[in-house]
Length: 460
Image 1 (cartoon, helix red, strand yellow):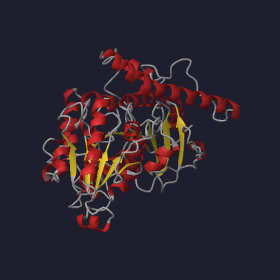
Image 2 (tube, one colour; image 1 turned 135 degrees about the horizontal axis):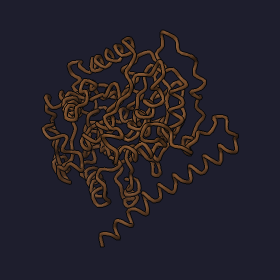
Image 3 (cartoon, one colour; image 1 turned 180 degrees about the horizontal axis):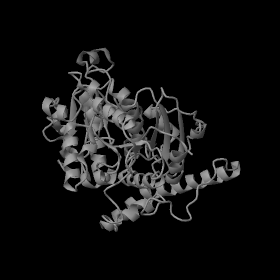
Image 4 (spheres, one colour; image 1 turned 60 degrees about the horizontal axis):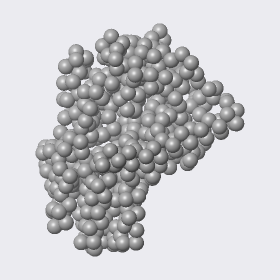
């Protein structure tokens, strides 16, 4: 089930058996952004492979519209629970599995796969990592990902931090492999191109985020400043790049969609101001300035040498994530941008973040992980999956994490958790999908309507 925009997708069970010339890779993802990262990572690290996509059922399971916007396709795809995914991995002979989920989901699947495949003659190489900028929960996220054969770091900066965390708990730091974000690309910025566009002053793209900032006043402020920028510069086009439509979920919960905030400006918005959806790379094709609080879109923009501004209007704070860009040379306020200021990125900072494209280094950013994967596939049998967190090291934490996904502390399925047969009757499928959609609707209503009211009441 892919939500209201569901479409028929080929079943993974229809996949032909592996041939020696085509490795088989599975990607498990729990949101549109993580599907993008996971699938593109698979393409980068295992060229000429067959890709099977599994969407983990939950609040952020992407709709067909979101998958289409991401623009990354699989040879086969279906939505699964954690236990259904486990059975699929037991049934199919994959060479590699990319776990592109929130940290708890990765930890649950590592334990489940370790338990299920402990006596198997073959197990796939397990790969995981982060979808973008790592500015919070560094230790928590990394230890939840420990147990994978390869933990990808999107930059030299991240690789150094990741290895330090693993060394600090006595875990193997060598599982960390430096690479880069897999979705960087596009043509380098050409400043002269804007003279050929309808708006001679250029196009300003404000890339918004679902959860940053996290309150109505700050989000309304940022939207108002973007509108005012458009009014002050009628020769410029100002685009607000949205992450999702109201009711859809992404990697993070969006309680206060900018679309709804923009309704208050209905009828008064300048003609050079628009809210837009679409693939970020395509939006950046016409951008002359990228503005954001701390979105990963900033790294995409910097990779293409597009002028990029990290907003300081709300302060430079860990909760906003813009502290990650200290030293980048990109920090700026709307007031500065209104006067024509264009930040210039610091080359050394950009290079440390794995987004330096000028010297062609990005083309070789995935060589190390390709070599590591090849070594693991052609070397001796892989050892048992051994995460740092166990019932001994984290008895008060691990059972809760695994329980959310239907597993016990040892990785075995919880008693009473069953898997419906794939050939369930049409009536059962319709009832199940209808109930799931109703539950999602109730969840969205609670997040976007009830929770903000309760918070406001608490502030009285």
